[in-house]
Length: 503
Image 1 (cartoon, rainbow, N blue to C red):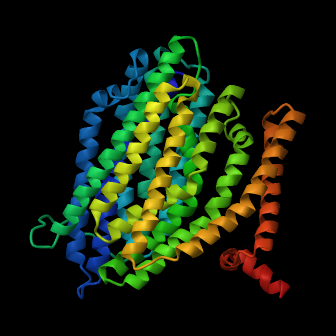
Image 2: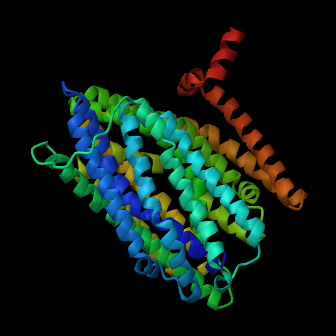
Image 3: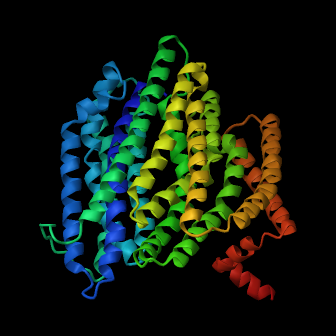
């Protein structure tokens, strides 16, 4: 985990960091609510939608150009030094154009979501992953072992960073057939006066401010992680750095992206329509569903992830040293505890934006960032080997505080939420998940002691521990009679066919 990996991760993370301001601040805050509002008009609102999309495409283009031109000062913010800084700037010039392609993907995806077409938005990221994995594989086949930043050549940089950007471009292009299939024909139109855009403009400004606060917290996290790692390396000590934090977050985002984000993506247009129609009952039902359905899946996954973190990390990153596996597993486990609260924080944002309440979302972001900054202060105070763990724990605590506040505030705004029912469900899920997680953890520990914890042994431990967790959880869930799980199973095609055949 040396200077080269930190340089690439910092440069490759920059487009995401900047794009989040666009996606959450303008695209998500404005497009879905305003497109659904326009579609409800008698004329279908095509002219309004055209003007919205024209502004959005123009904005992402300008931001991508400005960010790419400013690659050097942006990289300098992240405390990279010497050859690592120079390499990071080179990486950034190639990676920052990703902002444009991320923006195109988001804009097309928002239109598809408004038309209740979700499939393409779900599978096109796979195209990006395939291109990027192929690029990484080609790079490792040609240049494996060229680790120090000063040994990197332009072909090496272009191969690694270029395929990362190419993957995002392919993802954007993959949405075009689905976009055309909606029947909507985009016509660029300039001019926005007199079209009722003042309200969404205010929401966007509040949301951008909230995201600036969040991104400022993210910059501090990066600076602290890089500074602690650099200081430790100068003293001859190898500790977890920003690369570990980034890898842990990427693994953490897999279940969140597949499950919670998919559910919220489907419900967001419905929440926007309900809010636009002032249908409180429908909005309350959507929020309740957005809480309970992810809980049924994410609470067990959280406990399983904690129990199986070590063998899972070893399987996913076989080249890591034992110390690297331990560092990454700890970071991921501390994040995984907060999978469900993280999902509730994401629901809060969509709920606020659907209601056109950007100020509420800003206040929640301030709370989360305040906890994040406190965790950074803690990271500087504890021994350097615990710094990343402190930051990861801060993420979980911050989102948990925000989740509890959201439940309290939204139930007042909606005239009540079934909080007693939700609390009972969470307790039942914990009663089924905790014993399953403890047994899986002890089983993994026993297998690790029995074997050498190689990649094959880790795969065995992961499979055995995972199977044990699922078996125990299902038995306990049946004993606890969690009726919501029965309803969830009934929605799954394979389970439904099995149930009918048994009947």
